[in-house]
Length: 518
Image (tube, rainbow, N blue to C red; front, side, top):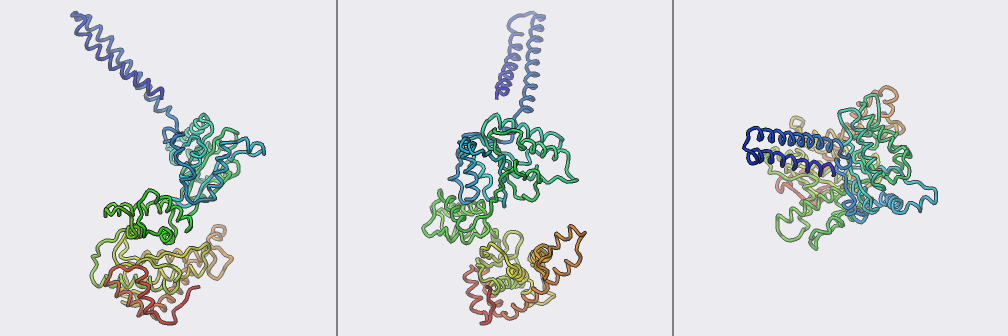
């Protein structure tokens, strides 16, 4: 800050010297020699001041602290966020409360011989609130908060990243007790191997040195966040560096409800809005996704100008968030029929094999991600996934192609099932090569292949698994051809059907011996 003030003063002096030289050369003396001498003197002074100004500005840029240059948050801004701003994530909050107490009253823990953890690693899917937790800790403890990204330390030139790491910790220790937050730490802390670069290794080594315990009792806590903990170097994860590793996962129904209540506090909701129902519908939504859903609903309500956010606004926002925006259909009548049969096949097999999953909507209108139509199905929340659940999921994915084949023949197959086939193949591959769900429960071919130079026959086994499920799906659809036709006809007429209406059509035309899912 002092360098900036000094450069401003020098800039003003240089301008004044130049103007004075021009003025005095014409007013003080009529002599040509005197005017020339004065002009040269003042021009020299102005030039010297300009050179000094340029030099100081260069030094100011080079000497700018890493934390400030990369957007460190000051004490006052950090205090605006507290634990009351965090909904859900109770386990992570409990661990961070201990750190807050340590920062506020370290003597309480020192009496028991406890030391403050050097670092806390928050890992989990994107959008689950890892950055918010770090900011809340600094705000609760009332300490400075330095927020950076792992990519801020990644540079082309060797030694630059390591220098920035050392400069950051130097600035943090000068501030006293504080919180350093490094987002996406995997950008600088990847596992070292033969392909590692000198610059990345030096940057990681600098971070390891700063966190290795050389500086004890300095009150600096490092919090890092990553979506890919498996990519981090083991040296980062050992005790004494990141002592605590806290998973920040996707919220379950009760936590989603608390997040929705938190983000709807400043939004005018209609009396018919049921946030508990919305929480049940938004399985696998992160906190950021829930906030975005409510924001989309608010935008839709503002366009309508009704003064409040209604149930229809939330429903439209849900469909927009999950499936994208419906576009006008441009397909021919035959193409529309193929799309209707395809989507009806998905809905039918899902109803037969996984009735616990809630069908939200079936549409033959093109939406986001290049889909010609879509089935919106809300899966049941589970802690464990069994083999039959994966097999049923494969069947549902293959149902669209099977319905097309049975209704129009082999020559009429389309490319619309390409993404379904790819996802089904991925599931089958995981079952065979990773999960040991193909007749050899104790064998993970993927792990075995890393140690034995590869395992042959995996592709054939995956193909056999997919073939078995495909034949099962065709048998189900053939048996329930009336239900398939009824739903396809309804889609041709309405283009989009809500889940309850689609399920009612299927149930009215299903045979009495329909399969049940446990």
